Image (cartoon, rainbow, N blue to C red; front, side, top):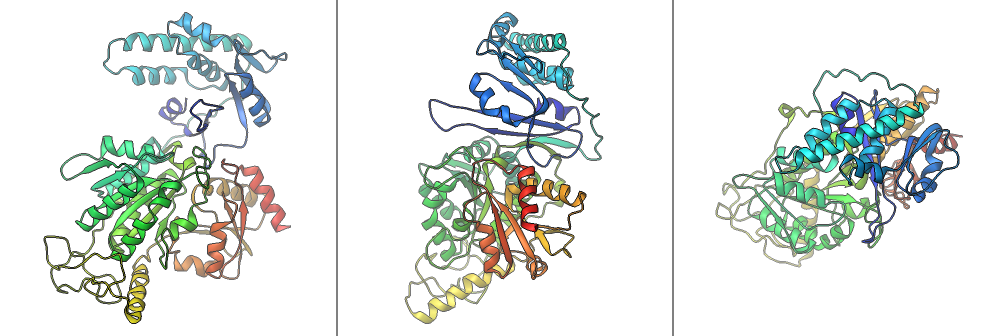
Amino acid sequence: MASAAAAGGYHVLTFSTFPSQIKGGPAWGQARISSEEILTPGDYLDVLVCQNRYAYDANLPDLREGGLVIYNSEEFELPDNSRALGLPADRMAREAGNPLASTIILIGAVAKMAGVSVEALEAFITKRWSRGRPGDEKIVSGNITALQMGVEEAAKTGLQLEDLDPAPTHDRPRIMIRGYEAAAIGAIAGGVEAFIGYPISPATTMLTYMEANLVGKDRFVGQASSEIESITALIGSGYAGKVTMTSTSGPGLSLMGEGLGLAWMAEIPLVVANVQRGGPATGLPTKTEQSDLIVAMNPGHGDMSVPVIAPGSLEEAFWGAIAAINWSERYQGPVLLLSEAAIAERAQDVPMPDLSQVRVERRQVSQGEQGNRRYAGDGVTPFPVPGGAGAYVANGSEHDEQGDTTHLPDIHVTMTNRRFKKLEVLNDGTFEAERTEAETIVLPWGGSKGSARAAWNELTAEGVDIGWCYTMFINPLPADLLTALQGKRVLVPELNYLGQFAAHLRSKGVNAEAITQYTGLPFKVADLKAEIRQRLA
């Protein structure tokens, strides 16, 4: 439905949640369609489509007053059908000639009731299943028949939502894309050469996307046997001069900790895309959370501070991947691209990225100007590529300027200062700021940006005096942003128990308070508004 609406010019956003048990459990998908820009999946439902009684009982509280219910009447019956339509979807699908089309029948009913173009849905069905395979024509015909059956049954009831406003016009081409696709395409645009990963929910989709699309001369995608093998393979690739990347989730990031410490100590560029899920341990493997920030900045033991970029939208997923590669190459070390399940799995219409704006950086390669003293000086130095000038030891132990192991206190101090000094070259992070003269400022991070922005828009429209700040450049934070936050009360919506970003801001001298939620689901705008009003009161 979202794809068909996007093809017709509408703004769309999808959200889904499903269980991790092998035997299954409650799963649901959602499509939001609007003539206006969409920031969140929405707080309530206009139409609730139920395949069974559990789905009805569990989700009815989210149906707005005046909303409609469409359900599979072969599974259960509702006594009050004044705002509901029951369809024997399985039997109707068999009659349509495609027993797998029961959901298409329900979508046809939704389209009729919600004013979504049936022609656009038919065009999507034709394109989706015209694959050049035997039997495609029968599948397309059966699905279109099933769609029309749903439309006809809905028309008999006269049930209708408010008219959908006409689709807007756009001054730039738009594409419908998923978050993991946007990040992967950004990485490819940024020049990634090797992608080596291990499957883990919800990051596997990025690995499989790269397997299909990171192709061509001097490009390599490999599936490792573990996250430890993945990170060490990346270190080897980066040491050899390649632009390298992987994707993982919280448990995998934990296993990569020692390897990331090695990359930090040996000063080897690489990027890890961490798609956050609920934790700790196995936690909530298929739900969304923002609880990996602390470990992302400090993934290994000892003194280290890994740069972190956390996109808050699908557009930012594209540009954030490019920025992560550029940062890694510039300062010569590991960078975390910190996403989350709700961003990675979301599908949304976004403006086509302007590739003329892409700026690709590469590490400064040694031409022998420092001889074998790879680690000399107190900042970034030219990178010796094996086979080229500048022999050295890429050492995970504390080392001198050539990389030889040493435990001398003064050298450890010198090298620790060097590694942290290099972070100063990452000074180009940007940020948003509006109404910063207000005493209180809302500052979300990552995927909570959309819900927080929607809440802020409504509050300011209602006359509430409150400011807005946001950045995807979490570590290091833009210096001007920290200056703007001084002396302000800063409210930080984030999906974790500890209030991790708020705590990080306090360590930087900011008066930050966390607004936390840890349900495995995104914030609802109404809940955020109520909490912000309560804090202001």
